[in-house]
Image (cartoon, rainbow, N blue to C red; front, top):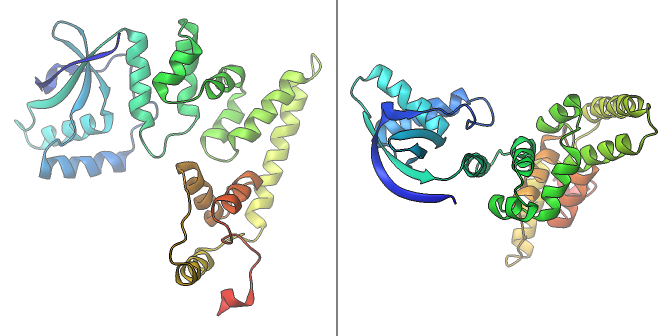
Length: 276
């Protein structure tokens, strides 16, 4: 059972990296540099999360960018941060890997592909779908969709999904088409759909932005002036869709529809007033 054993001031050199518990994406050098400056000036305000596998045997679970930043500080300033604040946890390797993903998932830039390997792994070690969903704060259907489509997803499609060039709904649709294809035609279906995605990407780059920042600002200011008590009910996914639409090259119809539903009146045909 996963538990927090204690909070402790540990020797930094005693904290190691476990081969099966790591950051799910390469370290962001800019983020490390930001943490380096912040920790050097203000100290380590958020403790590292470490797994005590055995007595005195500690492995990092959460805080990989902060650990890299502390390493950089110590290289420039010997004697700094010889000991650091930590949250010491205990549990099985399965639970620790799940916690590792959960901590990474608290980032705003977490992508669904970050969950794939861990969800598949936990399923393979016989975690019930309900337990996986509860631990990751997700729904059971969401977990079931990952288990249905991720294990056999072509790497090219996964990269497109990871880079935000295709939505999860579109990726699932392509996976369904491949699964339903007659035996021997799966590769042809995949190639056809990837070509269609490529054509759509080229077309999206050439088309006019559906909403510019200037027009969005003007319409929101008008709404605020005319309806000062009006509100929007907005989730993180809604904000992401709005940003993709404003960016203008990586959106699809799903993103447009979500913006229409969440921000009524914001996404309309351009009017003469928009130029005023």
